[in-house]
Length: 185
Length: 381
Image 1 (spheres, rainbow over the protein chains, first blue to last red):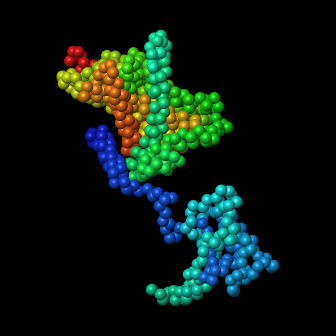
Image 2: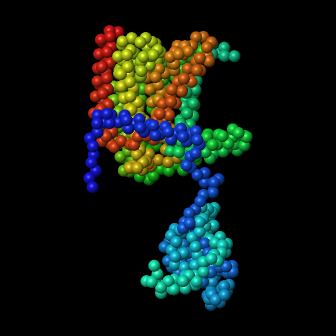
Image 3: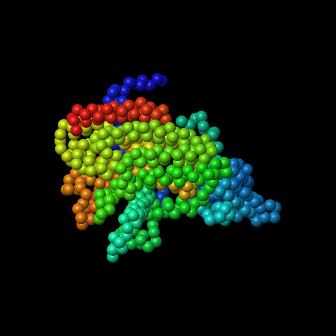
């Protein structure tokens, strides 16, 4: 597409109309902000900010409806993590048994280095147990590097519980939908 | 109490009062520079529908009932904190720079801005003292001489940094400042033709009697010559104003810095107080330019009514202070216009900048000189 460029008239070539127009715009904004005091700025620490659903904040571990650890220490998140921020210590043959019934095991230790984490959400996506979620926290602070490595206890405490999301129920629904897929409108 | 001053010899008295005036000008000027930065941030914020700096709170004053929160909201303490911050930051010298020039450049860019202020009459008289540090009879020549030194600091900074973006910034700055200096110098020649003197004090006196140079109607008479000189005054004022914008590297002429292309131009490699000195130099230059425009075109410390256009008689010290206030008001008005223009005009392209300088402004300034001379010759002064 070729944009037609009109020849400027003599008056326009002085640039005075454009300059005066610009002056009007900036003056209007200046006076409006000065008098009505309605700037667009959000005073962040005083006014709590709103995080939209789907925001990818810090990854935390969650508990199920009974308060048991959902993570089964499969280490998929550890393998997929692009910056290698997650480190899982599996329980091994002599470790503590899982606190969730039916589960084989739970991690001995689960560490996320928040300084390395890039908040990509791959861990959440890959987790077969829906045990790790990117929550809405975005301002993580610490006074030392060591403080920014969150351990299992801290991650579970920050993550809270997710009773509503029950993986196996979802799987069943998905399977049923697959069967009826072409018929469904 | 002050008898000992009268007992000094004239030379000693002169030295004493000059030093006193230097102290009384430099102190407020540096404070003004610091607060100009704050004003710039606030004006920018308001134009962009933002709030601007409103964080710093001092321990004791901040706890006063109404004043404390108000000053905090105004960002009143930000310049203080900014200054302290630039001093305690790490003063980093990159390994690849040319050390001597790297250290010299900030000082060289700072000094000319302060030297210009020496000849500007910032008030009428206080007691027996004229409110100008050096009452030179070639004031304006001195100013142009010093102002052209300002480019060395920037060029040297660009060369000393020994890397590509500062170098480009330095080249652009030198080309720009040299070409706009010509237009600037030519735009004031009509003023001298009209006034017939190079002393800035005399220029103000003339304007008090015959009307401001930018618009020479009110003040003196409303003769034919006055009306014929109006277009000349307006044109030379506009050219001087645009050249002053270019000389002080303000938008729309901030080619030397242009963040979007050159990181931050000539002071990319600088940190801490060395960067702070460039910053102070830039704002001091703005003040110098505003003061020059006030003096040359807007009648300096005079106002054409209420008898404020003559030097105060004995004992009218309040009038002397008022004159200083008038001068400051005019100067700060120009500063506001500088800040205002910044958010209105986009940056010029390099070739457009040179085109405007060499092919529009310089011929226009030359034509203006001839026109003014013709008007003066025909109306037979």
